[in-house]
Length: 620
Ligand code: SF4
Image (tube, rainbow, N blue to C red; front, side, top):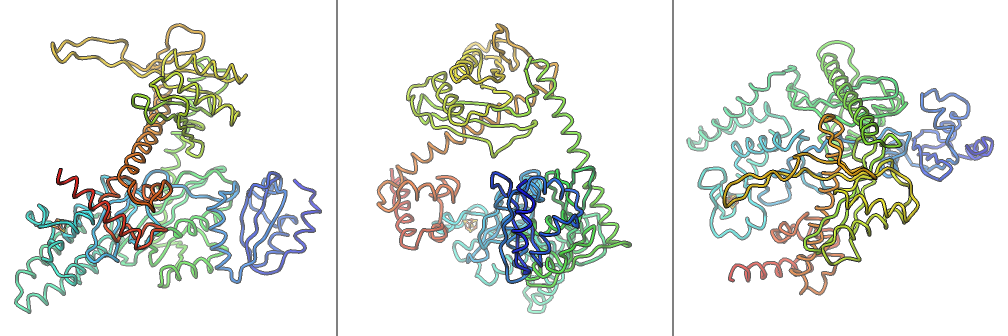
């Protein structure tokens, strides 16, 4: 820590207004971001011992510099603090991370005839997002159900614009064919509103509204419409019956469950809509010595800052020091008053108990997983005769087809878990021939020449040959660390002509160690073998995805090369925005116009170019 008096003097000149302070370590890395109503007295409290939070002494032992930013209001300080935490991921702040990939359904209300689609990523656009759904299957089931009751179109925008007649979806009664004007915009909007209400969990309100519409249709002697509405109501009531947890309250609520032990904490959120428990979301357990109020505060500001539905009420396990400013911020975001409730009795308390119990179960499961990972690492050290516990492992793989688009990948596992911030990919520069060994040599040389800092264990995808390459690179660069080769299992080969099954070798992954002729088999220690396989498969997936990306870029160049204004940078932006060449080709004019930095005229150029190419392709 810098001379304490120097810091105290600096803080003495801080203003007594609201704002955000940033604490930095000796390397100028931001290690903590906090907000305050009175910057001067808040930051001074760190030096007087008035800050009794468990992490305060650890933080103060590392602080080298403190800076501040003044804000006009406390709410601005809250927003700025949140943005800075997202930007710097400071070590002593609570940072929420999803524990798995959650799926969402999305719908863009700005479209004339919106479609509902399943998406993996929330974009920062004006579309509505529903979920999160814990698996693709759960999201697909919901999508399927919604489309049965509210037959919104399912086709992509480009197909929608280019259709010459309605597709099969219309024939089987799952779409009213807006593509050919068989439903007007107003009626379609009602379907959209129904789907949105259902997905927001407002089924009860939706049923009352549909009943009103049914009565109206019936009074107007429009029996066909009334029958359609009746079927829709029955289907919704059936779903409501199936949701067996009913808390009686019709308010939309989120419940923040929390479990802490030692310096670890697990959070989860329950979503209760119209009295029904619709689902939950959890996060990776936090390893932090923060107090409960700060953890809950950070959870609220970080989670609800994303484009998620803010309910009428959020049930939380404790009162927060910044409760009022959080309510003000959320109310402004939702454009309706919201409440933060800390219950002590009754139904809300029972819900909170349930969410807390769920957080505890998640914590126990995560703890067990951590124990298994630690056992696997110990087995690897023992059986592979490693000099160190392989807490940080790097695995390398090569991907190419006949030497073309050759790439290499490096993935890192820290304590048995993927550490995606430390993945690297390499474009092989020196080889055009399919020579795996030379490519591996190039990749490893570049990795260890530039970055040094070897992991505890280097794993190369391959057998003895690949292992020897890795050993020679490390020897050339005078780097000492453990290295192994992991060769994939040799599968049974079946001759198609005479249907004879030949066994090519022992059907199991083999591990090659330096200076040892025979491979080692780890099948007797499945948890250790699984960890190595997971590492190798991740390296393979990562290399392959880069290889595909290069191929796509090449293909993109070939289909967009006649447009003068679309160079490599714009091609990259297009690919990033749409995710694949197929989607770019299917994009509508409106979608192309939404690409950041692409104006109307450029979007039109690209659209008509792609259209003419696809028409040409259709002709030949
Ligand atoms: S009928 Fe028309 S609008 Fe409906 S899914 Fe098919 S192409 Fe799309």
